[in-house]
Length: 190
Image (tube, rainbow, N blue to C red):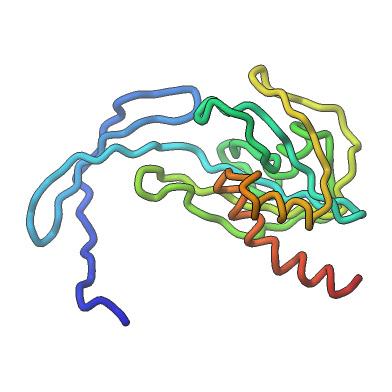
């Protein structure tokens, strides 16, 4: 059943940067409702696009990184990823981030999909990349504030961890969702 009410697109009147940080800006954006004519300021986190990488090894393991996250004040089990540099292709960024964070690289890479991390308050996208034939070949190139435990776990074990709440990062869960049909196809061939 569909709703008889259709939401209206608000008119953007302008924006000002409230705060600049190393990794994002906070903007105050003024909007007007087209019917009610009410105006309001909304805060938007203006961030560069991100990339997260599903890296599959030849023996059907996924590369994971465990790291401390300041937002949750806890450790998080994730797939490699990071910020896409201005003008950088998402697949190239995925290969770069995978290599820098884990020392893994692969022979085949492709975009699984792109999502909006939180469209209520963020303007960026997260691109989810699949890298196949991932093998540890390179030295680590961590940023100053990065340190990881690097794991390569069987794919089914990763899905079991996610199902049990052991993986809670939304973008990682999105990537696993988009990778699921690929994994189903690979399992049929084995």
